[in-house]
Image (cartoon, rainbow, N blue to C red; front, side):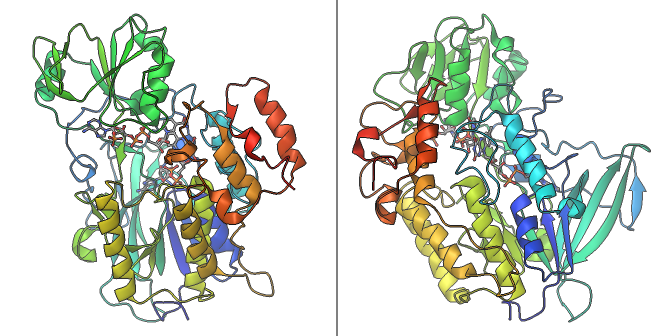
Length: 519
Ligand SMILES: Cc1cc2nc3c(=O)[nH]c(=O)nc-3n(C[C@H](O)[C@H](O)[C@H](O)COP(=O)(O)OP(=O)(O)OC[C@H]3O[C@@H](n4cnc5c(N)ncnc54)[C@H](O)[C@@H]3O)c2cc1C
Ligand SMILES: NC(=O)c1ccc[n+]([C@@H]2O[C@H](COP(=O)([O-])OP(=O)(O)OC[C@H]3O[C@@H](n4cnc5c(N)ncnc54)[C@H](OP(=O)(O)O)[C@@H]3O)[C@@H](O)[C@H]2O)c1
């Protein structure tokens, strides 16, 4: 029996999460599975919008709860209204030249390889996500152009009556240029709405006035599409994670002088000196109205034509009805989901799940998460969920540890922690039925692990390891150490040669026993 002790027969998925739909369908247990996607197709982050749309005002320090708000819902549903034009941040940050940054063998669901790699252009990833629905014949479950605008739990759920969760849905009818609103009820809900939609810009003294004085000068990487816009300009990039790195590199040689990069903390791939064409600056402490930018070390810059904030995104759940559900779903002070367990389950909501939340092996980890939820709700999980007290303990211990380490609660670092995390979900889900109902959680093969650790998009400075370890090639951070020696593999050999033929990426650690050489 599943955890709510009530049969779960209908499940809604918010966002076109292909793994969730595939896992639920394969369980061959649920009567109704619906996938609601506000965009015109599946693909999520990977849908490239060549036009980023009208520039929404940048509101420094503001959180999604302030800039991605719950809409007013018509009082009598179903209803037809004029289209709501509130900015939902639905376009994606994918820029023209973006390619994937982890090898395709990892950034892939286990039953369909991303067609080529190791790193593919953004449109390949989009096609992959779209076609994954067709592969599993879950495309018929997908309702596009439909935003979930409200999710409310009914206070009392009666057996065999309408589901526990009421979803309020809004679909733009392009032919009539109206919004159609209606409600649907489900026994369970999966949040697969991603968390790279609502950009974050930190509050800085003088920034708001600076933007008024110099309209159009400040932007966020979400709107960046191509370096052309910045030809001959003096550009300051804020933030040095992946967006900061990729944009600054792309602008070298296009922008005027060195590209300036303001860093709060060094990235794991950085050496002691900036790459050619880039100059490092500390955090901005103030924007002056004469155009001067002041930094934390007291240095100043003038003559800046463009400031691009590459300061990431905040998760947003504007549809979460706090009143009906007894409080918020996300705590922005601690940057974490409220009451989550293993980043997938919710202690207070056994019929709510999340797929795609922790920062770990993207697509591959989504698969484990989706299978775990499908098993739980079909009552076929191999192990029970821990008691609510144990789940709370997990959350409290993790919060304390990650806070002490100055890490994010939902970041699952590569190495021992990823291994333990996926193992936990793997063991929880267990096998499919004897008749073959349900997907099997996939193995984390030695080949995958080896490629993730050795096939890198960027060359690292001497002594730096991939994916954030002190040195990813150290035994204790290295996943392959925990799995045993890598097996011989000729496919990889072929790929390795291809990789080395100068496509711009690198293979590291060949001397220390690659899958090719190991017995
Ligand atoms: C610039 C950038 C580059 C990246 N590069 C890589 C990479 O190289 N490799 C990698 O593995 N990962 C990368 N990622 C992470 C990327 O987000 C994941 O690969 C993957 O797309 C996450 O899938 P998801 O389904 O969880 O979320 P998303 O892809 O964000 O999809 C969520 C979907 O939910 C929909 N949605 C949201 N709210 C609602 C609502 N209320 N109603 C209906 N639909 C809704 C959205 O429209 C969207 O289609 C990158 C992210 C960014 C921002
Ligand atoms: N496929 C690709 O090539 C590609 C390209 C772009 C992005 N991505 C993906 O997109 C996702 C988002 O990446 P992202 O780089 O946009 O965001 P991100 O990884 O969240 O990084 C945010 C950056 O902003 C900095 N920052 C945050 N608040 C700041 C403040 N108040 N002052 C100064 N700096 C501040 C952070 O510094 P700290 O480090 O000090 O916190 C960090 O460097 C990631 O998953 C990434 O892998 C992929």
